[in-house]
Length: 60
Figure 1: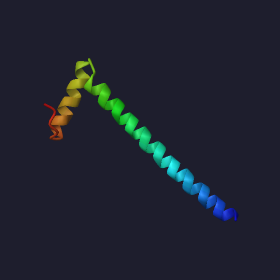
Figure 2: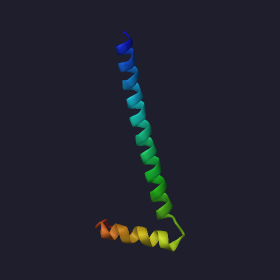
Figure 3: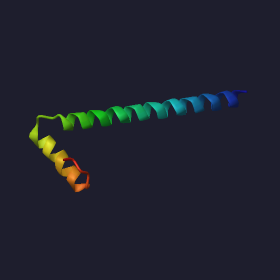
Figure 4: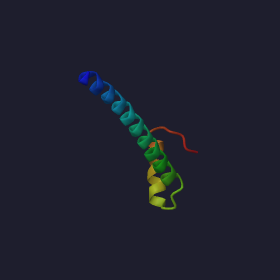
């Protein structure tokens, strides 16, 4: 039974870890987009603007 309990615990831990990683990545992405999109620092905004154009992503 010890092996089955360890496997079940590992599966739950892996699922929880993946959810936590996904939420962290989403929060980081939203923070970066929000920071760059609403930044009053011209260099930050211009760098993001140039990057969008370099990746053929329309921004205006």
